[in-house]
Amino acid sequence: MMRKFIAAAVAASLLLGTCTVTAFAESAVTRIKDISKVQGVRSNQLMGYGLVVGLNGSGDSNKSTETIQSVVNMLNTYGVAISASSLKPKNVAAVMVTATLPPFMREGDTLDVTVSSIGDAKSIQGGTLLQTPLRAGNGNVYAVAQGAVSTGGFMAGNGGQGVQKNFPTVGLTPNGAIVEHTVEDDLGEDGTLSLSLSKADFTTAARVAAAVNSQYGGIAQAANPGRVDIKIPAYYRRNVVGFVASIENLPVLPDNIAKVVLNERTGTIVMGGNVTVDECAITQGGFSVRVTTSEDAVQAPFTVGRAVKTTNTDVEATEERARTIVLPPTTNISDIVGALNSVGATPRDIISIIQAMKSAGAIHAEVEVI
Image (cartoon, rainbow, N blue to C red; front, side, top):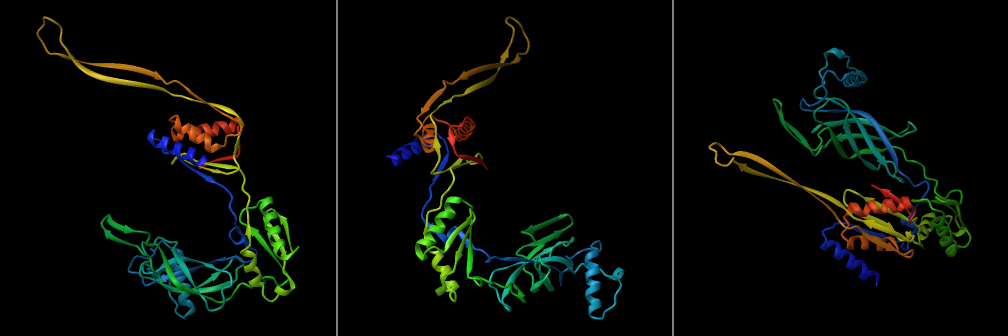
């Protein structure tokens, strides 16, 4: 019956020219793996400062003092003494090198790095990144990057005219970094592990713990709405990976708060399955004013001369009859949208009405406008 009603409401909205898109979100049984992750299994951000050389005159200018100083320091390490004032670093660009170190990476593994100009270089296309240590937030070096830079874009032209594609000052060095040190992973070494929920919720945390306990006994406990602590059974101490894999595939029914999301730009309404509505009356109407202008040529009777052009303006005001809809307390918000569509309410009208109902306390849900 509900499907027929929704189909009829959608058909009515199409006939009346509305474009509201309504989606209804309800909780479904899912895997623990899809709503949580094991604490400690995380990526780490790496960053370093380096130089890109071999540019075709598109590097930093003489105003980039950091580039000049970096080149002088680098040459000094190789026993080449040079004055900073004699350098013209238009074939060199100072860059920041960034990368993400995934969990469980070992020494010798390679990473992709992103190379971004920090000076006034026009392009780093075709350049080569010199050896650059990549540090984590604790200051330790975990990888070293070097290699050719691929920008996937270009800049061409002169004399005030040119063509640019993508961003030639940002490039990528595939497999350009070699991992030198790994982040030690002590997964399950103390006989316990914790699951972090992607969305903290008391009910969901309790259900996750109950799902684990139903499979392995009383080994799980919800420490807070966002974390579930689990004791690893003795027979799984040497196979923590297998234990985590078995937990990740356990089914669980997550709980969601009652929420309505409104997008005024596209007229999209997304609502949860727990949204309830109190009895309320909705009045929807409109007042329109139409102004028309016409031009006429007027000449005085029994006279000789040119006709005079006049402008006539007509103002017509129309007030539509207000439409009132009374909704019983058992009505959910999907019925509201369908009823408003059937009387010709525009997407903006529907969103405004839902916001007004929230202000009046008729909708028991969180309303978010994006």
